[in-house]
Image (tube, rainbow, N blue to C red; front, side, top):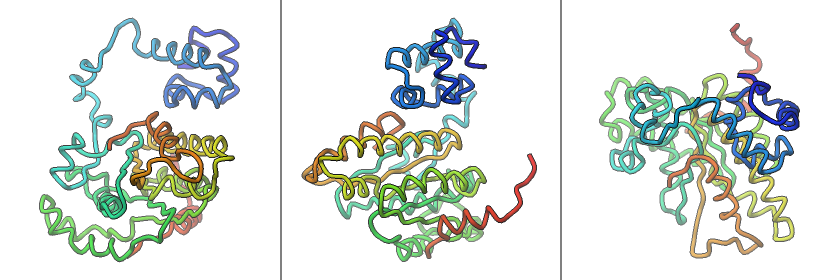
Length: 307
């Protein structure tokens, strides 16, 4: 449905069109704060816009969360999850990682966060009948170099770790070829990677999982107390891009964060708190592959298929 058909003040409609939002579906992809930034509208105007869009979709019937849950068989894709391959963790997560939204994995140093992320990079490549998405993963490192040796060790152990998957299925998967790696040591590089390179891999079906390890590190190093407002804007921009990508391609996003005794960053502000606010707007629960740049450039050299 076109935005012009909603019961809105013409001023709101004009602002929405200037932001190049043409349909109700596009509007509902964004959170309230994101719509404020895109349209320049006030918070009450944005709330009115979201209410009008939601009212149009549901009609005159009131739907509760229980009703939606009871009808989940009608929407299998929306309820699909990426399984980790560990029955205990999958049960704790309600079946695995949700495909839409951002999942944050936080813990102390050496708690096993990266190990779990690497296992997910392999789990996503399994066929859907075994909890995977039959696609690769994008792994963005912001602190250390990519742990290629640990990845190879995990690949070698997949038949023992995934006893639920037939051995011949495991042997057919070329795991290393479908983990696309990028190193982003600063905020600008991270934003460019998420904004330009990652969408290419997702749109062409080469990847269905995005991992950032870790999400707060570049912001913690680059911005001090005097730049807290700028840091918050960049964090919100990153969160908005990740939510849009996850929603558009039904690709789970895993953001790793390290926590310690001091939850507030000593360099001046709460990077963790700011990211927590950004992440809360989305969904949350608690040998090396080819480089992202190389994969994107290689794909750009190939002819695009029609349709």
